[in-house]
Image (cartoon, rainbow, N blue to C red; front, side, top):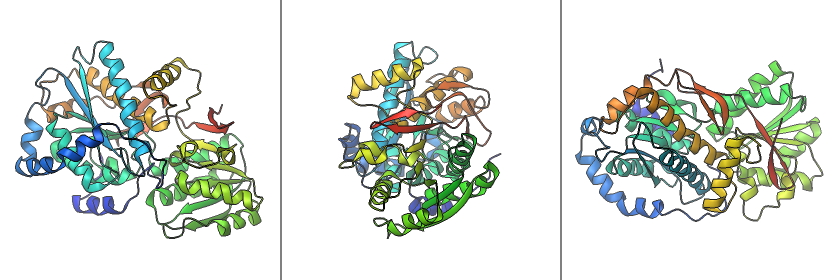
Length: 419
């Protein structure tokens, strides 16, 4: 059973937590049309949501026109837009494939997506807008802070929700919410596991953001797991949101301690500065990051040669040679003219998780949101998915994915899957 946490506590956390994959200063990306639609309908959604009781929303059938409505929200504009757009696009490709193959239980699927700008309050507005569009099952939200705000609303509505990439542990506190990516604690543990099992290094330095629960949480579990994997943390240095441009002091301490590998459990904007300043200090250890590092090759103005040899814990590599990945990368490139990142794969897999559960449960679009959720919850422990982000993916009773950790290395300005 998932433990209970009050709505007041979650709301407070949502206001302060920076999300998985929410690096500030990400490369500017043009938003899809959903962003404009979200802004235009925001005020109406707020008014209508205030007037309509949550119980009515949960009981009323949403798919009255004979289609399933799956939707999500995430940042389509702002500093974290890279992540939200990737999830939106990955989900769209999955829905297009599903519809072309006959849909879910013989019914077509409608995919709707709203911009939350990586903001908790706007995420609530986006959720209400999605409900106005008939939302029955949710893929979202993309980043952790907004997701913490929305999970209490989906719990009240008994709406099935799977976040593709929100990694803060308490997101899955309610039994209607599942997660596609690893949680923050799992990322720290899996990183130490991967480094140790693959013999990448033994003397480890860590630079982390002590003001960010995402980074702090990963560091703490990494530090706990490291000795179990034969790793020695020879230096651990923190920075905060108020001091995230000059890392030379932390880097020098890594160098003086003889760290062979430096673990960077934070976002690619700050990580790009660490790589640049390490070169200035003539220090070239192995660098290892987590999912917040994904996107560094797309950072505007960044010299990608500085990331050569960077290792990244991620369940997806666009150059993998399996048929599923190759087909996805081809479809993504044809549709959007670029190589997909992990967040696109997370969105794609999350839609296919819903498909697998929906088919196992035998749901139909005329069922209420609450009845759909109850049916899906009843089978989530039984489904198994071979996806882009892992093989034989299953889900624990706590809503967490069970899959093997993978890593990629940056070679010649591109991600390459590690063995």
